[in-house]
Image 1 (cartoon, helix red, strand yellow):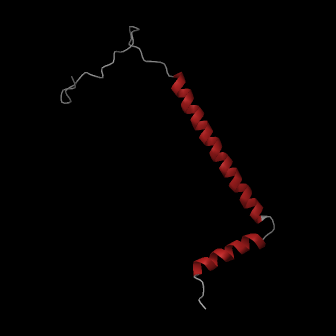
Image 2 (cartoon, rainbow, N blue to C red; image 1 turned 180 degrees about the horizontal axis):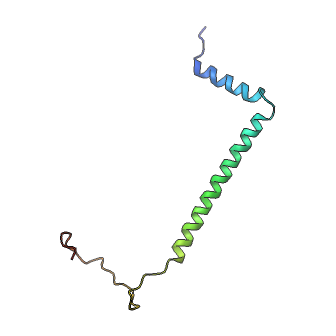
Image 3 (cartoon, helix red, strand yellow; image 1 turned 135 degrees about the vertical axis):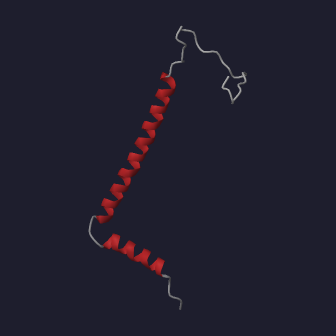
Length: 83
């Protein structure tokens, strides 16, 4: 008969300790796990809300004289001179 490895034995012993060790220990671990997941979801929702707020509240830039900047997408510049 083959003896199971050390890792599966340690896993089984750890689970047995959690289940039968101290009353309420497993429930407190699961409670902490649930709080962590809830906090993660809240953080994700806050990040999405903040990103959508910044995208909608961003106003287009204007030049000092009040005119909007022109699109220079087709313009070429010389990288050495910056002109």
